[in-house]
Image 1 (cartoon, one colour):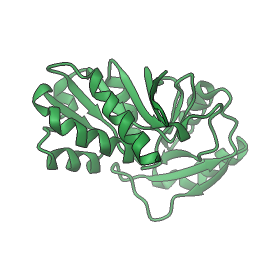
Image 2 (cartoon, helix red, strand yellow):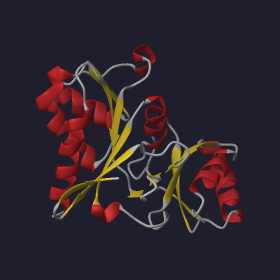
Image 3 (cartoon, one colour):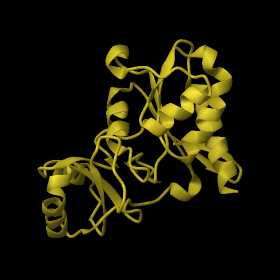
Length: 216
């Protein structure tokens, strides 16, 4: 049933694509359904910007052009999933490890549509551990700073990001003010970015449920 909810949300995102758009495409299982759906409409768009190497390969396998964002300028639409989302459209992302490139594409996009199933919708962020991308030499120092903020950090073993960095997943942070925490974490030297999408939240949530797709 959850997979059907993901498919429904992914399909609904097609309604927000206009002729000639460059579409940013995120990473994850729900986005994979969006890529499959987008393949049937690839003639409508000028191309895509991929937030990860994995998504780029999947897009190309469907014959969908993947462009260099440095050459495209601003992106009309970005479609991505989330590990958690609130009704304020604040997100935790990065379960797949692509959070930095996802944040870059979101920042460059005029509209960010987030596609999720209803199990990802929460009242307060934080049940899902917050991913933080860290330059390897700073791993231990950053972990100590996270502990001082009340967090319980854990290195994601055996994982290196597309940017050559490590991921620290942290639990137990107070995320009741996600904008403030996003800024605080990004000020720690060695942190590339964190998986809070609060300063630049989604513009629209498409939530797949038992009876269809809700828009928030």
